Length: 535
Image 1 (cartoon, helix red, strand yellow):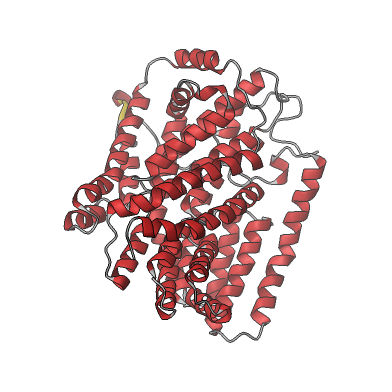
Image 2 (image 1 turned 90 degrees about the horizontal axis):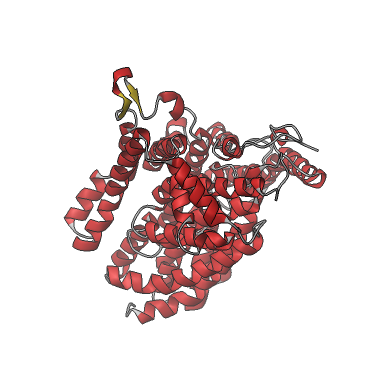
């Protein structure tokens, strides 16, 4: 049997295992059953020959498409195989793909690497440093105990997961999905640590168990990632694809979609989608224990033991509070003055979430904990511990998303599929738009998916003399989907970076939610658009 870092029989250090951000662990670093070990070895070995084979076969096909588009598509297919089978760490798979893009002449190195300077990357860096401070100084555990102490919440794992999902959804309606997940992940890991230690203390697991492989942990962190995507649909400012899709629709149709109309369309869809999400996650990742008996007493004891907030915790709260306030400000301005106002545009540009994240993180290196010794809340060795692998991973995802648009490959896929299918009815075009947006968003960011797919759908609908608002809104909503891979959305990348969500678990859960959520959008969008008086 493959063992974890702990020798069999030794007591697992739960906090060290869960709060260490081990994104990619080799087989020797995990505790697997013989069957699991055989599966993992087979999966990872298969990827070594399957990835280049899939890429080579696609490149050899006699397709009627531009050579750069076919080359990019072949490389991307090979990279997806690497991501799914993990013969190398997932971030390395993305880097191999970017290297091949340049080697095979799709674009030059400067053009290929330019998207790596995206604001999203700096959001990751700043938010991860803030999260590191919350973990180091125990603030995450304090937040977790506070949530678990809410009346009735801590009595069952299902209630904990659902309650956490509700908080995530509400926050992400006004704060960027990426920022929401990044700032709540430490609390989620703190909650998982509490549950895992309780299971360990009660003898419900073996002494040397691996807490990163608990199903309750996967369900909790996936609820955080997927719940943010669902909540982000609720308002126009909840997620970048919303603003992109709304702007393109208004420009093409001349019909303005107000804040209230958007919320009216989104609220019923989001409510049903959240119920589906909770059911899917709890069924596919059934928690090891349902009831957490005695959790109230346990939480009360632990909260008392924490004592008062330390200077480091206060400093972390100050930096965190300033960052979140500045993240929320553009959304509040958009709500009051309208998202088409000059005030919203100016403030939104100045208070870029990536810039705010790194400035907020910088405060941690300025706020002192012991001025006489010039000690601050964090030092650089703490920052060096953040999950740089996740940052690399999502950076490569942004690169491929940019190339899909700049080479015209995404447009080719959309127009060729439309010509082959001969779409003409409202239902068919709406279904096609939702499916295309989900498929594209699986290998690119949701922002890139909206920017690529909505412009494809609008002329297709107009050519078929179909009201373009319904299929274009379906594409906009579906662009926030794509839950199967870490590169699909920043939220997925952060969830994978927690180290408690195996890639196979993310694919299985994400595929189920993609299917059910896509069906909901296809069936509900025509009714919602009509209900709010659009079209």
